[in-house]
Amino acid sequence: MAAVDSVSVIVPATTANLGPGFDCIGAALTLYNEFKFTHVDESPLSSSGVIINVTGAEAERVQTDESNLLYQAFVKLYQHLGQTPPPVEIEIKLGVPLARGLGSSATAIVGGLVGANVLAGEPLSQSQVMELAIAMEGHPDNVVPALLGGCRLAATGVEVEPQRRRERQEWEICEVPWCENIVPVVAIPDFELSTKEARQVLPSQVSRADAIFNTAHLGLLLRGLETGNGNWLRAALQDRLHEPYRKTLIKGYDVVHAAAVGAGAYGMVISGAGPTLLALTDTKQSEAVMAAMSAAWRSQGISPVVRSLGIDTQGARSFY
Image (tube, rainbow, N blue to C red; front, side, top):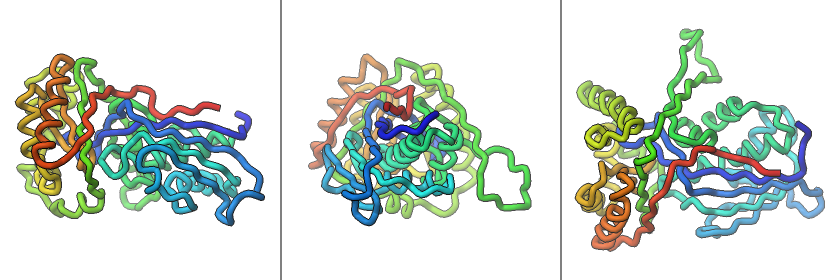
């Protein structure tokens, strides 16, 4: 493909873990960030070689210099190609809340890599872009569905040379069928929780019993998502690896959980590292679950935005 002068990239938000799928499963949601990259002359640019304009909620909190994560991903792809990144103007339209467990950083990483790849003439395949994204993020659960869409399970592939530590990790990516009757409801609070803080509360070791528990429940989750079997989902959304520890950082977690289940949700989990809470329900109960979660959190002095979303099946897409 010939290089172009301008490209727009739309990247969906994601929800990761889904209870027992810690750091290995994630789903793309119908909530988006939009990015536009345009080649410009050197003259109007700062020494960094980039102009960044941001609009949308929380726009004032986004870095507009070379430290911006979107631009770092943009540069990363050119470095991978052994090329100097071109001077560029970037427009960011925010639709995904920052630091809320909905994959805002993953949208930036994927958006920057995809935008750079298009401007460079698409020298890298989608799988090569994915590998760069996983390397930047450190784990696959958010960046993979952000790039590919749908619900995705990621696992490391067979290591050909087990005695040698390799820089490049092979991944096997499995699409997880998502029954159309399962509705993700997100309750986004008016406070943040950093991924670093959420990681710090996790134990360094877990018991064999807890490892077996999560293995069984992840397997059941995959079948529940595919079939829409409510009994399977109610059991499957339990977790022992991260939720018992992270929920202590989220004010009102137990109250909101009880309200969601009481209104008919199959269960409720922490979205990503939190503090957004995700309930899975059927289409008939979604409105009641939304209202119950909102009321429960407001009773705790928290003002959430509660939305019923769908599963984005396209992932990142570019227009030029």
